[in-house]
Amino acid sequence: MVVPIYETLIDRVVIITGGSRGFGWYIAKKLLQEGAKVTLTAARSLEELDRAQTQAEDLVGPGRCITIQADVRKWEDCERTVQQTLHTFGKIDVLINNAGRGPGEFWPKNSQDPIPFWSIPVNDWRSIIDTNVTGVFQMTKAAMVPMRERKFGKIFSISTSLVTMVRTGISAYGASKAGLETAHVGWAREAKEFGIDINILLPGGPSDTVFVTRDMVPGVIGERVGQDSALLPGDVIVPAAVYMCTDAVNGLTGRRVIAKFWDNDLPAADAFAKCIQPVHEHPEIM
Amino acid sequence: MLENMYHHPSLKERVVIITGGGRGFGWEIGKKLLEAGAKVTLTASRNPAELEKVKKIADEISPGNCLTLLADVGKWEDCERTIADTVTAFGPVDVLINNAARGSQEYNMSLGADGDRFWEVGVEGWESIMRTNINGVFLMSKACASLMIERKIGKIINLSTNLTTMVRAGLSPYGASKGAIETATVAWAKELEEYDVDINVLLPGGAADTGFITQSMVEGEVGQRDSLMPADVIVPPAIYLATDMSNGVTGRRIVANLWEDDLLQAEAFKKCLQTQHEHPEIM
Image (cartoon, chains in turn orange, blue):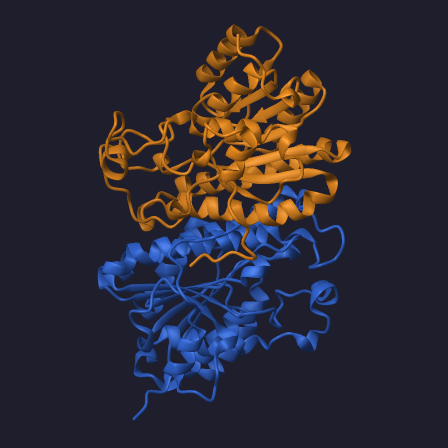
């Protein structure tokens, strides 16, 4: 049995969008083991959602995890996710905006090379902006209602490395994450007086999840597995993400946190401090 | 003899599309380009009366050289139609100015006033800003790019905003949309480089006196309407970017109010060019 190390995680209620796989599921597993209750959403992968539900029960028993088919691009789905979580668990402490669509959506099949912006299909571009920017807005807007009432809440959204944002071939994805981070700066300021913290978390490099598709690997990443792999392990996100769900970080807001700088040899507070990036007065993009 | 951009040979019969060209910055730039002998397509998404009005003035400046189209940059069919109609009327597109944008008036908010919080922004207002300011720039650029690449000629100019405005509380949909487009422009410039197509970002450098800044914003944030910069602040670097004088300048951010009329135009333009950064820093 895993001994809970973070007391404030016991019965903490966390919504994780895109929670059935990748970073979302890695974070969910650890949170469940630490005593949290989680809502997992997925827009498309229903079998995975069912599997996550079963695995969650195997891990910590029934009643600790609900799964909801919900597309963050649809406002009704966001509201429903919040309502069902409140109905089941009575409150929402944390929202993790993890659902995202990446360059895998429009990566040419069996090709190592990404495509220039003028070849990105219109609907793929829209679907990435809708999910990664508007979807995060909608989920966050929906979660703000109960959080403002309680004057407590933690919201963090998964982003990407700064060099990835301006990389050729994936501009839909890069632009979406830049838009997202830009929005978070203003949001954090607006939410501060309500006791709600809003931050950004990113792995710090391409990671071994389904998000990085097989076609991307040889061209962009090199080797997928083994010592030569440039991919970070899929669970690289976990320690910082879990720490950000605890009361240890209350009041930390408007910050950018890079998960891979977590150092397991340090006490958690020191390990987390290494992940927090310095604040810039204003963006510099170009 | 020194080159004067307002009479530059490259502007004669240069084919330019200006989205949101019926007013504000778009129309200021359009007027000047028509005077310089360019052929200009102006689009507007919602206001045919506005287009009729500018068409009349345009035909006085340069008869037959202005096409006005009711077209929504958020719709792919409208973007394709804008390009097709322009090519039919004037020939292949040399310059695209992505000026059309929606601002905080879409969600009924005033700069700096109380109660401007992102959770109060309506879902439709948010979407309408993303649809025009991000997707619209992508769709128009995508629609223009293939012909520009084929001809190895082309200039794309994306209008943006101040860096402090991008992260201002109460303005998050607008700020986020401009952050996204500046980021996309960096990647697009690299993708277009081998085809000699230049793409840059142009911004006024402060709040300017256009319909974009509503009266409520003036009261909340700007103070007096006459403290706004004139709308034609955008014109000199916009014209410079449309001429061959700027060939090879790409992936750059250009701040219009740094233009100094007393300098040679090439020098004045250099003053507007911002230092390049290796990668973005946002938060």
